[in-house]
Length: 115
DNA sequence: TGGTTGACGGTGG
DNA sequence: TCCACCGCCAACC
Image (cartoon, rainbow, N blue to C red):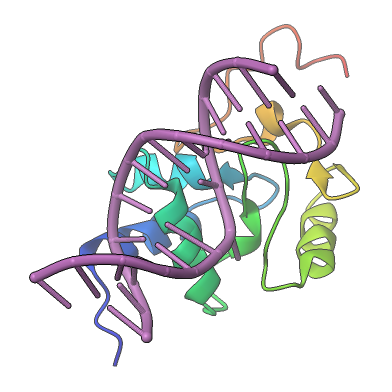
């Protein structure tokens, strides 16, 4: 079986906690997993993990690009849109508003009421 | 043991 | 806004 490293296990754990309708960047996941700067390593893990219980479609690049998903970008996009997220082309809009920082979203300040 | 890989990130041009 | 560079990290081979 695949001996998961501590890091890999933590990464998967973090991704599993991303709520529906929210996303996290590879860098966010790395940081939440305790390895700041290991965004690339997280990408590798996502690439290899085919676990249905891990919502890897909610992990995107910092610039908002959906990227990868094993060539199934269309699917990744569909899943996100189905969760209520807005996407233009291959890029997620409003990243700042739906970004999962490990905690809940910001206390809905001023700029979140309007659109 | 050591080099290569890649679903990344930030800076600049 | 888009693209090229360079830096980072853990898994692979």
